[in-house]
Image 1 (tube, rainbow, N blue to C red):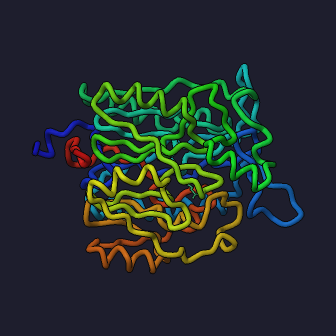
Image 2: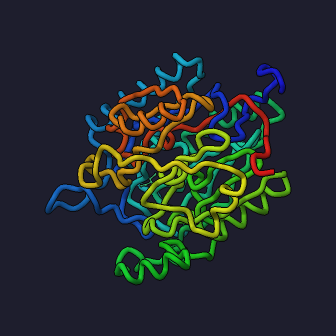
Length: 373
Ligand code: ABU
């Protein structure tokens, strides 16, 4: 094993190695996510009122910022260097040659756009118009890491047009039966015409990278990841969770915690033909307990599911951070031998993510291992 001091400035091969440096998101300048072909915010708004657009109220930003700052402070007590994105005004409209959108979104969830794969930073294409420029709050940091160490590489995935033809507009209206049928063909609101992926549909397990096909990642996106990463020694595995009718981001569904152990979502089992990779190699799949909040009790304007409960952040193979009120999950993780730290985070849910979504790991100890030899 290399000494820690020898590790490149950017180094993270999996979701669980000891964490040294991390970006924690920020709600500064956040706006409501607008309706667009790739997104139809419609749940948890105020009865009888249209879903809001434009800047988030200052109190909602302050509540989320307090919890994000709390996470940053907790990480620092654990010896982790914390960095934050640049504050931008996301309420500004966007106009490109192919689309217009009334405002942008936020920098609460770096995980959705940025991923560290070994010593390489990848900026995802993104799948929604309001998030087209969401790499911007991280660019200064990326330049800094890239300048600091010649072993660090940086790849920007090809930007899709996000023109009307990239989307299936009727997706949001499909009746349940059609949704079920199309689900099994993995057809969602994005078509296969352009390369599309959000970074949060990926999960890193050393040499092996899982990529969920979803509303935010299509097969062209997975092909691009395969062709880009496999010559560098990775193996890219598409994965599917056929009972999730609105799949978006893998980290509330299938969460590797340490070598041999994955936290799974009981409502979203992995497709049968994709199980052998894990079962044959002796991995244990442990179901997360029922979240404390039901879907009906999730915070106003939050477009994510109750399964934000299992969006935990690993500090090492035996230490994990959980949302403060998720006691059943905390108990399960303790029984599995983890030291469990907790932090309040429910005010961040409104922005679509919890602890894993709201972070981007820059440096963890460790090297690339083959967990599926
Ligand atoms: N951004 C993660 C949301 C996933 C879920 O709603 O289950």
